[in-house]
Image 1: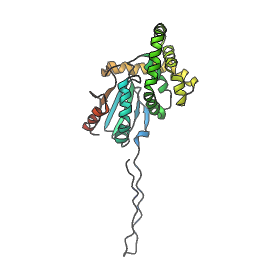
Image 2: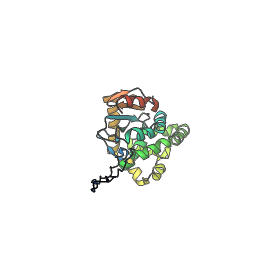
Image 3: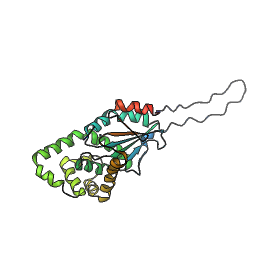
Image 4: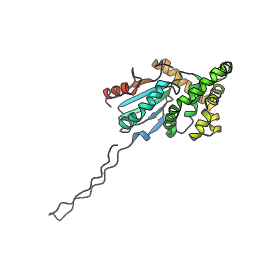
Length: 239
């Protein structure tokens, strides 16, 4: 598409009657690790959630303005996390693919400005608010096409800032805990722009990504764009 509990049982030792000696008391079982809480930034410029040694590694190249990516975020992320990531069977990495250019860049920049542990909650919130961003952007493009064209000619940090203002990204991120000053600093960061641009370029040059969402299971591109099609791929890979 073009454009994105384990039950920890505490076992009590029971004394065996008749011997006069109780069995040594066993230590309670330790609750299994919830791998959803393990989030790191990867060398490829993405953010990975889950067990780094998971037998099944899922990578998504996504766009925050892509409606199909938004649908996957709404329908797929909850079961993916609860059924596959939490247990350590699957790790999930999100990498940026800027299929819609400047609007995607603006959202990617502010999303990467929050601490790693906040990356996925903010990503989820961005997808939940996707329609609002789209409506504001469309209204601006219809009302001021020449201004929009001028924005496209700016240097990437300035371009991203202008589109963030148009889409209401800065007040949105303030509600996510990122101050206006912090948001503008990130939007204007040449180093962060360069990093995100490299992730996008590598997607094309190294992995032949052409649209979003682009899913890879253990390094293999899969033709699945929705949760109902991706889930069987994860099962087939051993999840």
